[in-house]
Image: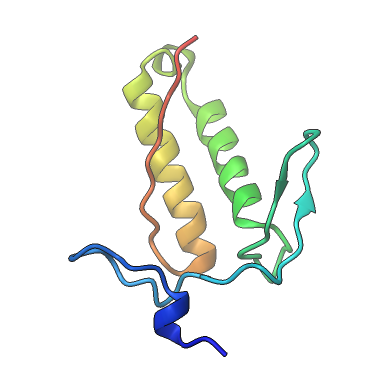
Length: 108
């Protein structure tokens, strides 16, 4: 049987604690997503709604973007900040923790 020191990854000095992160997900099944070839491991689920963290984040992104005036949607920095705040708030509301969110906006 392996010990904690054998299963936990070695982290660089000053890295955040992984005490609350699921390290061993080998026993968890892969769940197929609606897009062919895409699947996920459900690491967290909102017990009240059954939504995964991915679904909660996606809904927050859509709502934040659609609620922005069209002129502000053209500003990548404004979109990034609105999405970051929305995702952080939606997950914090359900998970009771404030996640670190990084948003990358691709202008096409």
